[in-house]
Length: 256
Image 1 (cartoon, rainbow, N blue to C red):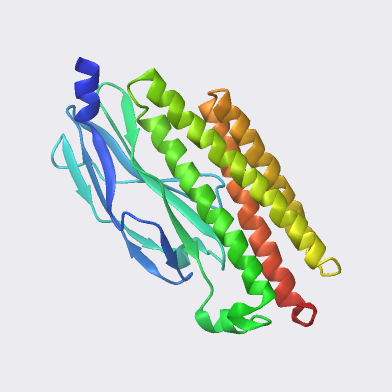
Image 2: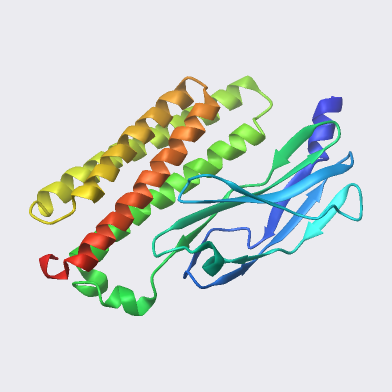
């Protein structure tokens, strides 16, 4: 009971914007982070990763109150040197006595081109190129959701075994469905754009399918750290596929 009460009294969350965003590479995103614990807070930070790669930790100052902290850091996207179609993930983390740590939900910022750049795409917003980018974006959005759900499951697993098993089964099915969807999109792109220079995009899409399938297997086996690693790999390859496809279109507009 003491452990359960302690867990209920410790929380860190991002209260603003508290949702996924679409932004341009020059936008500024103000954050609001709150942390509370029954023991004295030792460290509060927010962590970010570009395209599911290496996480960067951004430490926040020690709070004036030992058990409560509120911060308003600002995220300058231009300082991160992001490019169109990149995905930035971020969440907050805190630790308190005794040595224990806890984290907020994971949120994502998707860097979109300026609208005038989208309108310059061959066929415009309704053309084949933009439709393909939208389908890749849909897979990326779904994978972001599964990553967030797995992160929550790892941070705050349900108390009862049957509920934990049910949640894990749902995550397994979601990743397996995404693996199949990636394979279907690969087959359709390869067939419909057979003579177009999209080989690099297809390679990353094939790798994403494998990563997502491995993530489903790890979730099925209750190997959460491995599942989260493969989930990030799947997201990274989906993002790389979208960026490679965008580059192929930009470099060869006449072929699309």
